[in-house]
Length: 390
Image (cartoon, rainbow, N blue to C red):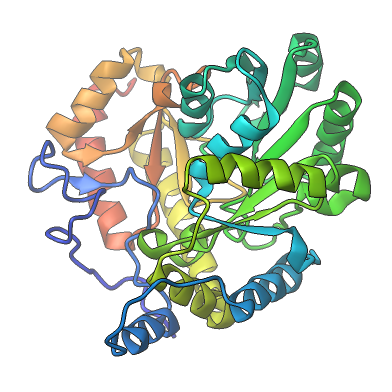
């Protein structure tokens, strides 16, 4: 049994999430996408055991780590991976850069589906590529892809689509039918798909994740998939990533792009230790975590319905991130953010940072003990009560 209600102070640990010097000292941090739960005990045990060895030399991705990763994907997602397809990588964000460098030239078009994780657009712009927007369509509280619009914006210079699956921040877990239709369109128009599947294990109970690459050889040969244990087991500080590329030509190009930067190299010593322990022994921890996350979201949803009915959360199918619509208050985005940070002393992610479609929204990370979530929501409700319609 794991106690996800345990309060573990994180201030003073150089936490990117909790130790921002610009935040008031009593700020509740519900922004950065790491959770406030301890990692599986087996991960801590493995790290401590390795730390007892006094030589901290260069490390490599061991065969046993690759085997643990492959076994996890087959067991949890029904996806059989050939070990030759795997390119160990330093993280999902570097993978986006490597892939853009590998599969496009300057001024080529790269499609992103906004609102989406900000490093997607940042990578495209930093590498001098052309940003092609395929905004998601909001149907009530649920989002869908607009494939007709996508087809209309693809031109001869559009080479790549960055897919977020499950989608951060809108919480969609794309169905096999949706992915197949997207994959067919991109294959027909000559686009390679790079799929960020980092949240693939964080699916609400009763749901199912389907990797695009598992839907047929035609998709396997035209896609690149990035996965990592960091979100699943809450180990981003010692996390690593696995880029899965069945097509040997795409794989070779990806390796060349990574080696240019000297970042596609040996993993950190503790990264490999933590990842292997997580994939081998973290299943029971995850099985207990997922219902807790579901109940946190239901708590959030019920709280908003009673105390802040003007704020509607998007329907959640995966991740531990709630996408909240504050637009009914009629306030500018900057004012909503100011009220949250300065008056409520609760830090969320402001919606516009996720690109087109983020206006009026805030992203809330509910991967925390319920008492923390309750206190944060209580503070926010007290500040925004003046803006609720009577």
